Length: 98
Image 1 (cartoon, rainbow, N blue to C red):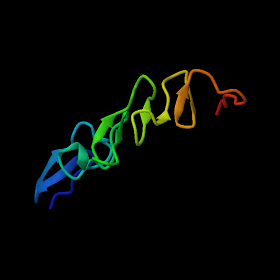
Image 2: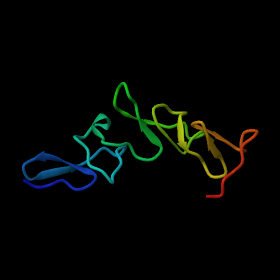
Image 3: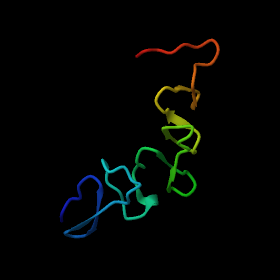
């Protein structure tokens, strides 16, 4: 049996096919649909109810998880604080250069 590579899934004994384009192509998937991704590509999150890859609110987040506005990474020049992106640090906080 042929082993699928990253970004592919096994259709039959010796046939592999490409995962859905919304799946993270560094990992494999379980089939052709977005709900069969192991992980969604950057800019998308896996909806916990439907298991589908849905787009992040890119006006607020560069990457997100669990919802379109629950940020895990921010656009250039913004700062992540309590799963939200801000153009400046909240009062009492400072930007860590690390």
